Each structure stands twice: as C-alpha cells, then as structure tokens.
Length: 121
Image (cartoon, rainbow, N blue to C red; front, side, top):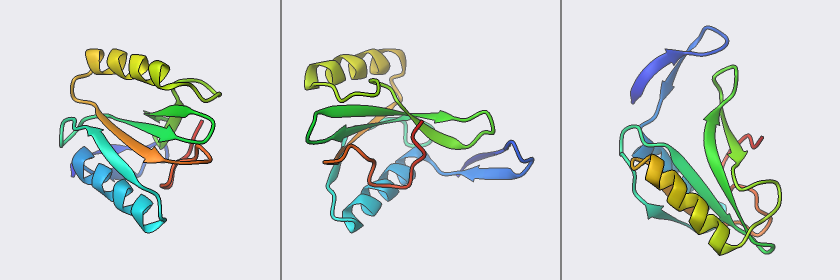
C-alpha cells in the first residue's frame, strides 16, 4: 500500500498501489460485462491513472484527482462532450510528456460512464 495520509475528516486513508488498483478496476468492469485494457503501464506503486471511455458518441478521458476533502474523484479532462480519437491521442501525449509514470486504461463504455465506482466531477 501507499503511505497513509490524513483526509478531510481527520481519518487516515490507506491507498492502494497503482498497479493493484488498475487490476481491480479491470476485474470490476469484467464482472459487469464490460471490457477494458491497459494502454500504457505507469509506475506500479504511485503512478497516476487516466481512463479512456469509448462510447457510442465518441470518447472521454477521465483524470484522477482529489477533492478539497481529499477524496478520490474523476475530472472529465477532455471536457463535457465526447471527443474524437485525435483529441484523445493529443491529450494523452501531453499528459505522458509531463508525467512519464502515468497509467492509461481504456474501457468500452457505451454510455460514457466508468464501469467502476467513481465520482465524476
């Protein structure tokens, strides 16, 4: 596990290693009948995670973030509307350029909702 840290409520949250967490969300999606794949392996211990959702209307990239209370949440990094593959590729290239430890995971998500428990902002 990653080092524990205080949260907004003063409680200590144990954080999973990135590689383990990615495997868990892939399994969770598979159990729900949705396929997913790792497009890019990042740092197994502490790499950030980007999630590409491939839907009927296009694609969305979700970026991991923390709320003001320290809770995990996801930001629609490519905007509110679905985008095309070229826009996703450009966004991913910029992010990988600034953070070589980042993971990229893609899911088939017809409704553009993540197939794992997620708070999307």
